[in-house]
Image (tube, rainbow, N blue to C red):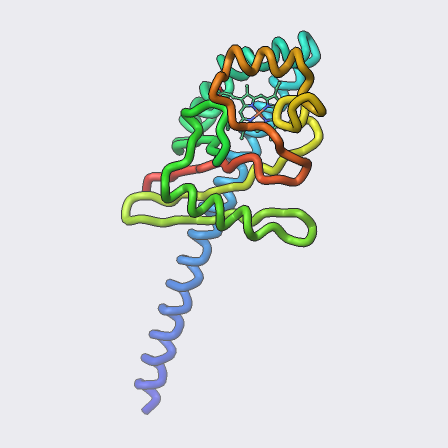
Length: 187
Ligand code: HEC
């Protein structure tokens, strides 16, 4: 009788341990991904702000065109993940969504909290774990992603037209979902 209950206790401990470690692993991917996205965001905003200070949007747009994807890729490589910035209305067509990503984007976009925050989402497959992290619009973004002729000035529109004739990344407001970081780990 005693033996059986000891064995049962053993099973319970083992199962609890497995559940807890599974939970931790999930938590860990999300935490690591958020840190990587934060590093990329800080780095991109630092360089964007410096470029804006030295030559305004007219200089910062070609700077972003030359460097944004490169910086994002290299921060991903450094952290041994595949890091991308993706959007339903991309400026650079490289950053467009796949069908699966479109569903995830819609789901995250629909779940804005009362405080204006969007959730992140984790998708696991046999070989990968991908964490999607929201990129909301803030005031600084509007001079290049806001309302044309209102927040985006004429001279900025001219540069955008030249550099990105198929640009979709306009008309955003503070708080709207500009894009997602996709952080993919290989298991
Ligand atoms: C100086 C103008 C400028 C400002 C200010 C700016 N962006 Fe952008 N943004 C760009 C350009 C140019 C691209 C395309 C970069 C490329 O070719 O990879 C871009 C691309 C992006 C992308 C990738 C998806 C896409 O549309 O291709 C995201 C996400 C993004 N911007 C978010 C932001 C956010 C958030 C802010 C504010 C914190 C911001 N941007 C401020 C010019 C700007």
